[in-house]
Image (cartoon, rainbow, N blue to C red; front, side, top):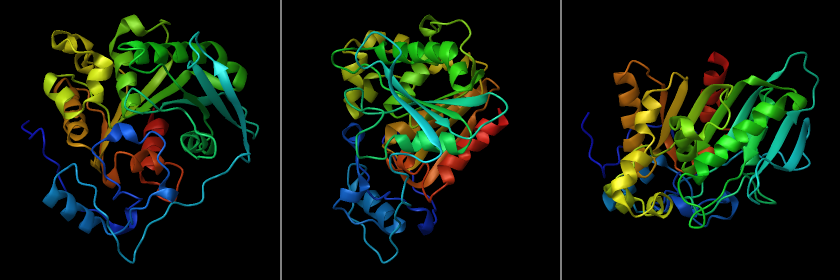
Length: 335
């Protein structure tokens, strides 16, 4: 497979699938709690966005406008209806080792599937929620509306805590779920683990390194990685500087700290995806992971979401754009 490292492919998309996607920004790590309602950039025609990015480079953020603006549906506001929420449960010793549990209020005769979400934030910032913001409770509400137990976690951050702290914290949270989710009505044998952006990188690190499997029986039924990075190289640290903040300066250790080879050895159903307006490195590495898994006979469920950007993809879940949420749910149902 031959791909230009700095290429940004464009393709067809439906204008009615646009969800504040024109807010493309190379500095993906700066958007840990982006609020579309306060963004001064107009939102509109996806074709105009693509032409603007193609003409001015991947780092360009176009101000797109048209008469056909796409806005998100009104998300649930706290206190949430039909869902029981428990906040700030400690799963480890660090002050950031906290998680929230979302449980459907309706009675159910059987243990529910469990959906763990790991947020992004460029390794140096981010949280599972911000007061007054629907993110990332939107992922938890999506899980609850699909009759799952949602678990949203935070983890330690660089530069204080470096590789493999994030993957280790994912392991701690998975262990907590294995031990405790039954009391919340969840099935510890039907756990789905998802990460987006830096969260996907931490999920991949956890999956690929058996030393981070704090419990022998992880109970994982599937893993979902949205816009992740899986092969750490000096070129990648130049294109995406936050990567070096977490993985360190010693390039001789990058191969050891990459998750790609370990992921190829897993026999776990995987869902791998990226978005049309993702930064180029995320596109390339998602394509490489898909190609590599197919080469060893274990193709993942693989998607490229037209019209979406690095941040709109995760914010669209549990909105009036069901594309990504439906894709995730189809994967969960199948496994």
